[in-house]
Length: 385
Image 1 (cartoon, helix red, strand yellow):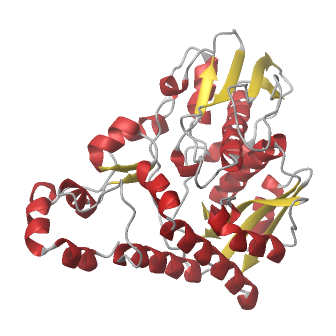
Image 2 (cartoon, helix red, strand yellow; image 1 turned 90 degrees about the vertical axis):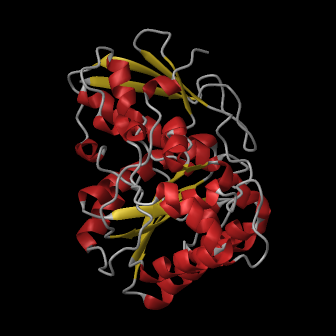
Image 3 (cartoon, rainbow, N blue to C red; image 1 turned 180 degrees about the vertical axis):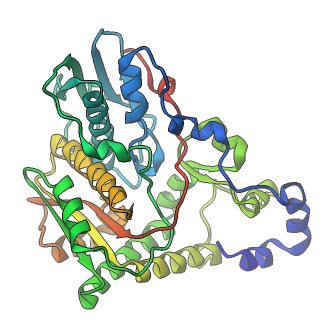
């Protein structure tokens, strides 16, 4: 966000008055929003210990739509929180199913750390249809002691994994790093791939498609407002919600305080702040040295969940290699306005729909050190059926 442009928009007097109470304030997130990242400690219930790791999984818009039932001993039942969906940008809940898969993968890894086999039954009461989700379980997981289970080396990265949206260094990830990420996330019916700046013409196409899809999402009022609704601005909102998209920059807080950033109204066409965001993202795409993708054959609900498991494994493997990743999912979404970029990226990757689906597409490179995103804690996810 460009401060000088915002000052001109806001007007000197108003912004000066607004900045006075937040001058010198830190933009760091409040510690209570990050408490989950300190780990479960001496948790006597092994299921809660396992869940304390699973809730650190990446989730679309950081909505954390995981509902967990622990009413049956030695069992975890996972449902989706239907109050935490993205009907505008994710109308078929494909990304939400992937986010259930990221949770299940970290749950499985954590169980292995305790010498438990997670016997995972997906959709035990039936699979959702392609257009909507309901209250039936995503998974029913029995925890069974098993001396033969093997720990997953990727588990060491769970507390270090970040979704890094900052600018990346220009160095191309090594072939060894690409191989490690690919091996970690490949699976039956899945295909992973990379493009780097060593192929300038090809990576330019990726950057162009990603930027156009980003522009569409930011300039389509209903999709932009969906993101605005989950913005958490300032320490009070961030600490109260511990989810969504956190903004703690003093200037953004000041603009919100004086009513110059109204999250209930989409900006007018040509809005300078939106234009600046598009330009800034374009600059980051231009500097991004590599892109990763994950393609599945088919797109049923089980495939989507398994794609989510593969995606978090890719992120963990990248973390182990000292690399960062950021999903650029706008072109993979199914809302009408983004159909052209959707077709383009599928064609570019040799994944014609409907037989194939590009489940994930991400920036890859060396990002700066950043902190974790807020998490709501285990108790916020517990709910008996």
